[in-house]
Each structure stands twice: as structure tokens, then as C-alpha cells.
Length: 185
Image (cartoon, rainbow, N blue to C red; front, side):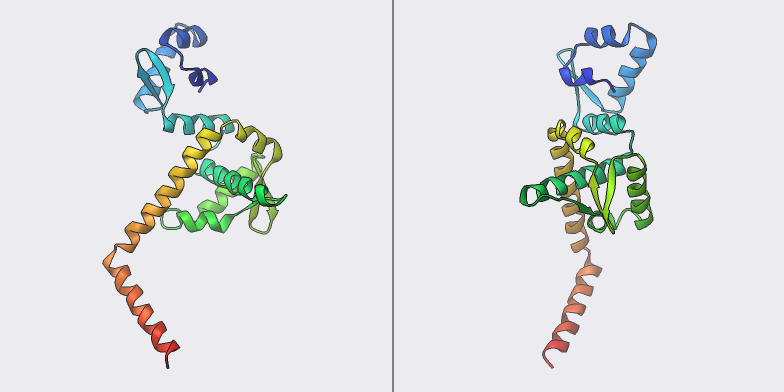
């Protein structure tokens, strides 16, 4: 996806940059069909999902890798405000996705990001963003904030749904009663 899409181009602008070809027309139709771009008054702009896809394309990563990279970046950025070092623990990410993604998949995701030179192992299961990549990501702060917010909201919603499951509520009550009996004997 070209950087041009961040400049709110018209259809003419896109054709001028990409060429007046059938392939360009197919690319534009594909972007529209996949909801990567929207068109308002002949002005093209990336959708939220299109912006995420742009970052995936830019760093040559898949969506799960992008989520881990962004979560690592956000955690590291917060930690840098308090102290010099910052890192993200793989298990924190897994805790947020464990109900939908296997641990092995998360481990493979982290390994792929290390191999691609986007993150490095800080220590044990802790990772940091490569300094040059960290600086580059700062240029996309609005996209990162949107993805981070979405990621956390999905995690919260997932937990809310899980806690509404009658079987889970029943088990929580059972464990609570067992715990009370142990404490107050």
C-alpha cells in the first residue's frame, strides 16, 4: 500500500502515481472490497483496518505479529517514561489471547519478529523493540494508539463474556466456598 493513501488523494492522484492501467483499477477495487480504503467525495482515505494493513505491509508481518509488536512498543514506551529501560513480557500478551490463540503460536510469532529484526530478547521471556524500529513506530502513533485501544477493548470484552458464562460463575462460587472453608477452619 503506497504512502500516498495518507495524503487523502483523489482517484486521479492515485492513477497518476500508480499508472492508468487495468491493474491499478483492480488494486483500487480490491482495496475497496477488503474495506482498506473508503471514498468520500472522490477523496480516498485509509480505514482503521487499512491503516493496520499498511503497517503490516510496511514491516512485512501478519496481524498477530503486528499486535505483539504494538503491545511491546506501547509497554516499552510507558516504561521509558518511568525508567531508562523498557520491555514487554511474552506471557502478558499470551494472557490476553490465551482463549483464542495457542501458546505455541504466540511463541512462533515472537520468534518471527526476532528473525525479522523488529524486536530483540531483553531477558528470559521479555522483549524490546529494536531502537530504529521504535523510532520509526513513533511516526505512526495515531495508528498505534487505535490498534492498542482496539486490542485492549477486545480483551476486556472477551473477559466480560467469559464471566457471563453460567458454568464459570458456578465454578467461581464453588472455588470461593472451598477457599472460605479452608481459611475459616
